[in-house]
Image (cartoon, helix red, strand yellow):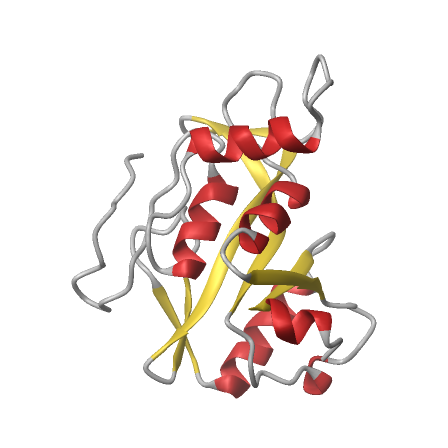
Length: 182
């Protein structure tokens, strides 16, 4: 699939499509609503995180991406944002959406070769962002941003995603908010 570096005409949202194993890069750019990060920038972050590593633990050893949460957190910090892990034991009704810039979610994903689905599961990063009072699923595997709806619809969407197995929810917030512990 190719990357789409322009805003989606239907929604006015920036939406990158999946390429290689670059879902973390796409999730970052989709939540930020512009192309700020590239594979090269993510690889540089990996080198800073593990400068002496023979095989970098923060990405695929094949060099195709598959970046871990540390790369996402460092990338967000470089633009004045922070990722806060949501404790899934807490009910989503307790999630205060005030000040939340967006969401990055890590979900299990099937590995496919063409039309053949392999019995292997990988991890996949997706972004969710509000635009003009509507929340959108900006998953890079989607052809276009998918409207989720209102705050209530967002909570239902997040609950459905989190109930599908080993998923992680990151709240993307301004650094000041994260440092204040809000």
